[in-house]
Amino acid sequence: LAVSKLTPNQFHKVCSKQQSSGKAFGQPQCGDGTSFGFFFSRPLQKKENSERILIEFMGGGACFDQGSCAEMGDYLTFPYKFNDFVGLSCSEIAQGVENGDDGEDKFPINMLCAKQIGDVDFTTYNTIIIPYCTQDVHMGDNEMTYYNNDGDESLTVYHKGAHNMMSVLRWIFKNFKK
Image (cartoon, rainbow, N blue to C red; front, side, top):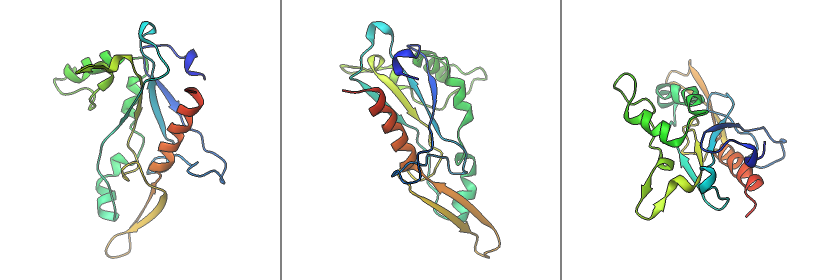
């Protein structure tokens, strides 16, 4: 779906597609093998532009052996709680961060797209939020099977952060020609 067809001022989930096996960095997926996707929002129509793009990378840790990857297991899958962003604006999400229903932060993310910092008004930017689900600092290109010290337990992790990032960049280049 073309960016111009998406409703402004609300987040949409964009599901990344697997590319042909010969395409470099064409296999986006999360660390546990689940599908990767990202979130996109256009600014309000009165602020709409095609020249400003804000990319927010979710943070997290990294894993590099069976123990650290097992400990980070919840962060190796797509963060489905972020599906709650779909249909909400940046300011609604930022309000959720400040005023969670249970007194806790409702969304653990700093919504730059709802802020103005100095002379930069991020509310005028097209915003992309890239979930972190590969534990490779968004740069991995490997499938690893990690074994515990005894060699009797294994965990396979798809460190495909570079593939995920390339799927986002391909989408940007397709939808923002300038």
